[in-house]
Length: 397
Image 1 (cartoon, one colour):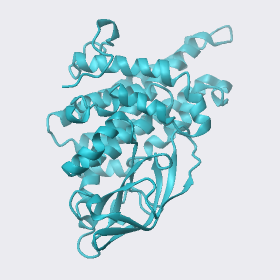
Image 2 (cartoon, one colour; image 1 turned 90 degrees about the vertical axis):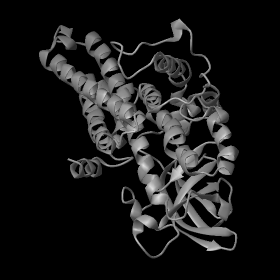
Image 3 (spheres, one colour; image 1 turned 30 degrees about the vertical axis):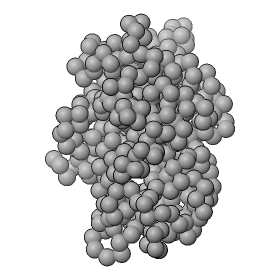
Image 4 (cartoon, one colour; image 1 turned 60 degrees about the vertical axis):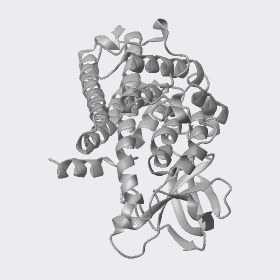
């Protein structure tokens, strides 16, 4: 197993609270390294990335060189061969950075897009792309959502028709993270016109610069502003037939399978954000005085913060348990759907209260909590809206 560079010394370790049974010493060392990177490289610089609308490529390559992009990938590609719990550590610590756009830029690459290549790609495809994905040389995006199809994956309209030794793609994709500056797109398209909709979708690899692939526009977002998001258009986009990712007609099942991973890391990221918001709000209400005493002395404020802290702890443990179930080979679809629904709503509940307790300062763009509240809003939407997730849970009760 390849060790992630820079971890292994005793002073670098961040012990899991009360020695959690879910984490090993290696997980703790990973947490320490990610937290150190957040403090030294992300927090001092990410305000500029918010303004420019994307994370600089040299920063992403630095993350690759530190091993962050290969946490669960094999050593032969430069990975560390760790587990789902390690991914949760990575996502949680990125969430604690307070810059949701930076976190999602990395997590889409590691756990929502490149995972399609690793799971469904041929050996030739993986040998070509995975080492460069792990190093950060190539940044990936996944293009499933369309203007008229989000959680309803079967409703996509982008088509891919065979033409000799190539496929021709036509259609549009919307809300594609890493879509403006990404290098490699995992694209869902319909290849079968008859039969069950679930057997009509196929995944394809499309490289940046391919004729017929256009970034129609960079999307201007309410939050996640340091993450580049695109609308893509495919107009007679011709790609080699060998760019098919997995078997024809199996794309829907690959997307559904990978949704579980996506929703787990989004839940972990949300709980990292919620904890960071509580931490900075506690600091604020300890220092801010009203009516001659710190705000924390107001019973209503401290009790509400205490209840939110309890809810965040419950959400965090739900994430950890769902990730652990996955490492045991258990079908955790119900638990992961609970994670996405509960954590996506909870992070917004936390942000609302934290803005409130910051008072007027919480409404100012110069405050961290204002940005965090904007970033958190999408957590109950992206990767499976709360309503869709609750239906998934209900089916399994």
